[in-house]
Amino acid sequence: MRAVVPVMEGGKVIAIVSAGETVTNVVASLAPRIPFVIGAAALLVIVGSAGAFVARRFVSRVTGAMRPSELSRMVSYYESVLHSVREGLILADDSGRIVLYNDEAAELLDLPPAAGDAQPVEVSELGLPPTIAALIEGGGRAVEESHIAGHRVLVLNQEPATPPGGSSRRPVGTLMTLRDRTEVQRLSGELESVRTLSDALRSQTHEYANRLHTVVSLLELGRTKDAIDLIAQQVELSQSLADDVVGAINEPALAALLLGKAAQASERGVELRLDIDEHLAPSALGPSDLVSVVGNLVDNAMDAAAGGSAPPWVRVTLTTNDALDCLELTVADSGRGVEHAIDDRIFSRGFSTKPADATGRGFGLAVVRQVLENHGGSIELLQASGTEFRARWPVAKKVGS
Image (cartoon, rainbow, N blue to C red):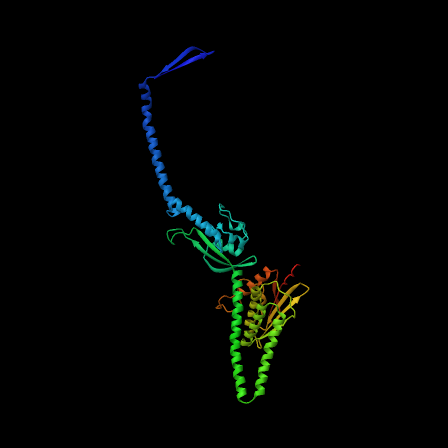
């Protein structure tokens, strides 16, 4: 093998350089290196195959043996579900860091909009309410727990997130769902008004049946005047109460609620005293919120009065406070009152002075406070011989003001 190269100067060839090597020498030089090259290539193939096998096993374990196309389709479905459900969702890893939350959770907890490629965030960096933060960091199981977040009362559920392969495997994190109790309370308030009217009609049915039998008996005995007096007295009392309530309150739902509570109180042997301003100003609270506030306070007062000293009574005062431009509701009862040591706890969720075996206790006053604060109102416990609450909320703004 030979190579010849001319030497140029001024465009002319002035010399030629020639170099050569025999084929035998070339082969003798390369031959010892061929086994090393083959061995290195074989080693790279073996290492690459082993690495590919290990990676495949790891990916298969992490993804549950799903193919890339299946993973892509699943992620698309999960993204759609995550942002379309009406419940708040929070995903946390096994270290208690928040991995993902949806739009509803961001709205309920006043969080910044979630980014699709966000990294796990410490709970302390998001400013969550202490009770909710402790629940996420603890990773425990929670079923229908109520927590206060700002002006909202949220119902929380939390379950461990277990990877595919059975519940015996170690959880990889937790899944929390959140619901706004305000919507539930709005529906329960409407249901409570219907239930109250139903109970009132039921009690009135018994009362009128008894009165009808009395009137018939008086007529059979020939005491017509006594029968007429009894009928007139009952009609006058019922009509007077209805006129006082309906004439002063321009909200039919609230008027119906108070009339129903009056019938309930009569059935339970509790004297219900209603003191309502004439020409009461219109309320900024909607009908369902009014029913929730007044209904919860009156129900608590009647329970307290029934368990207190005789004679039991409940006083409901509803006035317009012109100085503060608000409506003022005062509910007092003849019960035993609230101990001073628990004054600051009665508005906390889940706290109740009623028997422990009573289900669904401890949320009435918390809901009342939440409804009032949402509309710029307030509620406070007044120091009195019994129990007396005072609630205030704005009057409805006039059109054009």
